[in-house]
Image (cartoon, rainbow, N blue to C red; front, top):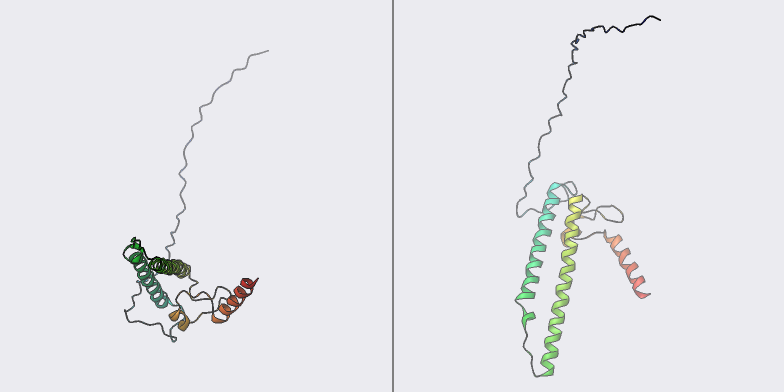
Length: 173
């Protein structure tokens, strides 16, 4: 049998220039950046404004933050500078009992304020999320008058009464 030889053919490859399709870049629509809304120090929310508009949110954020600062300051003063530092031991039993009672009342007040600070933090969180001013049960507006009186309100008056009735029923069990 005859031998066959393999012949290598030299193949020249030419690179064809492929035109790249032109891609149009779509620019995003220009959105005007909102300047931060500023409110005056004597601003009060009005019923004529849209409920929980940016002005309302800023007003209540400032109000809650200042309230929290005042409570923290009062707690610090009570704990570090108040009668809580009274380490004197009196020989009179009545004086000791009176001092103990005073300290107990003061500690209860501080504990209430700590819980209030926690509620203020929760209200500030609701402002950040965007649900502040709306009832957590019914999602109805709580109302500006109620929020002005109780900025940490979570429920409408009707829903609050319902919660209080439920708490009373369960407390009696």
